[in-house]
Image (cartoon, rainbow, N blue to C red; front, side, top):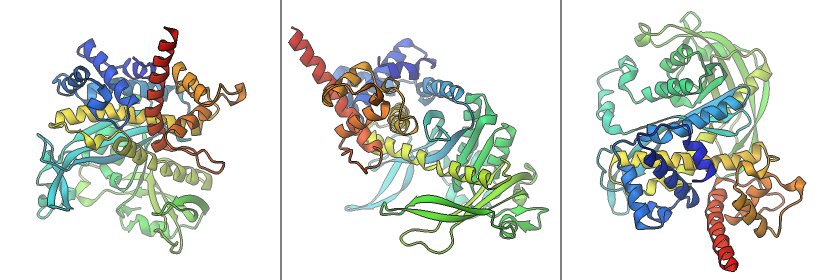
Length: 461
């Protein structure tokens, strides 16, 4: 079993040690052939059949599969000082074919041969990252299908959604993951939970308050503020501009530019909607507004309206919170690695249980790819052994024409060599390698390691 696989499994609890061994083999196979199908990753019928049986085992679920990884994430969290961000987001894995057993529909897709149903599974994940962008791992995940919430949209026509308890809505996943991830990590005061406008839920604010942890979310609604006679937006319009901040943005065509936003912030009392006042009371929160004036060419202007329970006393603290929220795109990148890199939506498994088990395995594989990419940026001078095995380092040295000098023996240098195997050109002004070239390079590196090993055996004989 590979060292990284053993580390991600050692903290888990399995009903049978043989299941741990099989999961380790499956993680290693999928990690060596990223994006490949199960038959391609396993390479022979016996291993492929064992992988199918593992995904269909009634004693296995996503909690068992990810328990070791969550424990390893908690250990990495404990080893890192200071504040750690927990990024929350939801993504969907669609399978445009006949509906598998237990998988609900997502939407209707119009294709060449008519309209058909896109069915699938949804994933709500909670990814830990340091404030400098290093992903530490997943603290909680939740898989579910909309089949369990059938009729929710039709119900909105006759019932005010704010009167429906959160436990009966899909939105309850936000509260569950905040509670679970905080409990798993064991140090709520160091955690800041980050969410987009979908996380603008008053129940979430109270869940974080009850867990004694912190949150930073982008708002979608304008709530009552102060004594309940005004709104947050009206209060913020009366606040002076405390300063400006520059944000690097990318438009739909990939062009990078710098946006200048005007920053306002204020501590105020925020009230729940009238339908929720019997269960929840008002909270003292900080509102931060970062607004870009004018209409920039080729993109929408930045209009971030954030709410947090953290204090903000000056412009430096407000800019810090804006930088933390800007980290939220990393969880979208992680989901892209799962879909585009690991090929999660290419699976042909026929039941929701098998699909979620495979997706849980791919979550660990996808995190490792993302971690490799970001570690070389956050800690470029670290030794290569933190990311690569001695055999992989030896192969990369042979490809590069020999080992580098001691000063150049860093993880960033070796990751560039891996990325070059995946199509990275490494020109002088090129940005650091991204996830795509890394996952392609890792697959080629595995093939090269196997080729060099077989060649050395032949020569030795």
